[in-house]
Structures are given as C-alpha cells and as structure tokens.
Length: 146
Image (cartoon, rainbow, N blue to C red):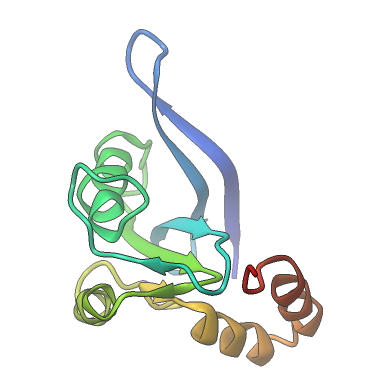
C-alpha cells in the first residue's frame, strides 16, 4: 500500500491566517482515500466529550469544523474519498463513544481504520501491529495523574 502522510498540516485563509491544524493527513492511492487523523495525547483519566461545534477539544468540534474545512479545501486531484479518524490516549464519555460507534457505520470510516480509537482500542491496534514499544511509551507518558 502506498500512503503519503503529512504531519502538522495547517489550513489557512486567503490572508494566510491559520484556520485549523491537522495532526496527520494520510493519502492512500491504493484505497483512494484521504484520512484526516486527529490525535489527542491525554492523561488516562481524561474523558473526551461530544461537546458542540463551538467547543474545541471535542468530538463535534472535529466532525463539524475541522474535518469539513479540510474536506472542502484540501487539494484532491484524484477525487479520493475523505475519511476521519479520532485517536486518543485517554477515553471518551459514554455519549461520545455512542456517537463514534454510529460514525463508524458511515462514510467517515476508512476501509483500513476505524473512526475512533480510545486508549484500549489504540493499545489493541498497536499490539496487533507489533508496536509494543509504543504502548509502553503511551503508558509512561500518559498515565493517570496523581
């Protein structure tokens, strides 16, 4: 599989002002997909909520603002499908988890990744890929705060 990965991409307006920042944009020529990846490195006890379209650091902020802005403005000469993936080293609230499970059944879902990964799902994915060192690093750097 061929994939081009852009990290820390900034979407700017015509005046050059930053509108949004993207952790990763993965373009897969094999899958004909552009996957917008949001990564939140949070301590284990953090719970990411659904929030609202106006509240940053939430599910709705990403899916209502960040993702559509890129979809509508990112160069896509091959007409690939845009997909989304929200990853955290923490957890989601029950409401957010329910919403993300629904999103996983929609056009947001990539053929290679789920729409969301909380701490447990992320560790499972990393373990399947043989990335035990990454699991240890996350456990060390994003453990419960005292």
